[in-house]
Amino acid sequence: MALDAATRAEFVLQVRRFAEERLRPIEAKVSEDDAIPEDVIADMKALGLYGLSIPEEFGGLGCSMEDEVSVVFELGRVSPAFRSAFGTNVGIGAQGLVMFGTPEQKAKYLPGVASGEIVTSFALTEAEAGSDSASVRTTALRDGEGYVLKGSKRYITNANRAQLFTVMARTDPEKKGGSGVSAFLVPRDLKGISIGKPEKKMGQQGAHICDVNFDDVRLTKDMLLGNEGEGFKVAMQVLDRGRLHISALCVGVAERLIADCVAYAGERKQFGQTLSSFQMIQAQLADSRTESYAARCMVLDASRRRDAGENVTMLASCAKLFASEMVGRVADRAVQIFGGAGYVADYGIERFYRDVRIFRIYEGTSEIQRTIIAREMMKAGG
Ligand code: COS
Image 1 (cartoon, helix red, strand yellow):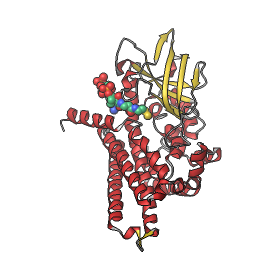
Image 2 (tube, protein in one colour):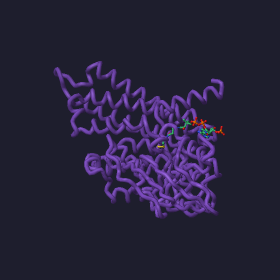
Image 3 (cartoon, protein in one colour):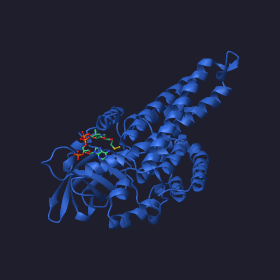
Image 4 (cartoon, helix red, strand yellow):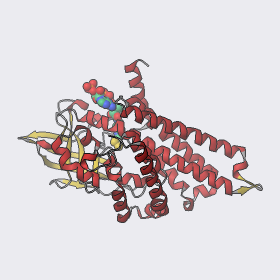
């Protein structure tokens, strides 16, 4: 599953133009309204973004990981809230189904996911199971031929728009940790599901996270995704992939901020000279460029290795750790270079400064990435 080089280059260019012409002009309004206009969502669907990494046989674009991150680099050049609208369909919401779904499950859902008719969402996190995601308390207990799902999930991206949830729930309460957990494909319209109000967040307005409550929801056995007791591993493999996607987003945002800084430093004059002629400003720009380039190389290398069939658990965590921390530094320098203008809303720099803070937290905090990297190193002996 991959685009040929010419198709990829053309698509990347198309996405760049779409981001620049269609999305960038409405960044401030989307943030203010905390909503992406429906006609923009429709354009994203028409462009194929919802089905980016869904196999072609189901109507998606069939992107490889390298294709996907190449597209996400471009989408990072505008407010990351836009990417969030379809991000769960491309990534964590749908990839469990792509990787572990039965032919029947795939045929039932993937065409709708690819077209964007079905929005997917990934329901792992709970109030008491954040970083310690193996300790989920939501249960799906056997009842006759099926299961009964009970519990609550927290901070679930796109929950308010989703028609299909990948839910991790404990099927064996006797077992502690990941081995008692199973994954399920849960349609939104089942009786007993309720969605909380979107949370008020620090940044990324226009992207929504909500609680999802399951009150004795009856699941049929064909909703089980993968084997019983293997849901935690499904989640971890989905996250390995998702972490590369988020790393690419961090690179894109960093590149946007660097471009804005270079433009501003070339215009703004102090002491009779443009900011760009001051070595202390140049040093900040150079550091940002060097670090974003390093992150881009990491993301591309890990993605190519994943496409070649390598296990990239450690490399995905290295990329996520480095890229998310890198964009935090780049955004901080951007505020500094813009000075007072970086702190007021009109220039949008302070918005990005807030937007990027979540990258060090979601899909695994920096602390969790370091834990995974160290564990993988011990396993591999280096
Ligand atoms: N791929 C495949 N299998 C994996 C895996 C991966 N990336 N990571 C772990 N596993 C397997 C392990 O091999 C182990 O299998 P066995 O029981 O057969 O040995 C099992 O899963 C349990 O793994 P582990 O013992 O490492 O689990 P822990 O609870 O100690 O820790 C961490 C797992 C901390 C790495 C995990 O909970 C995590 O990633 N937490 C962050 C979650 C997250 O990103 N949340 C964001 C929410 S989504 S926006």
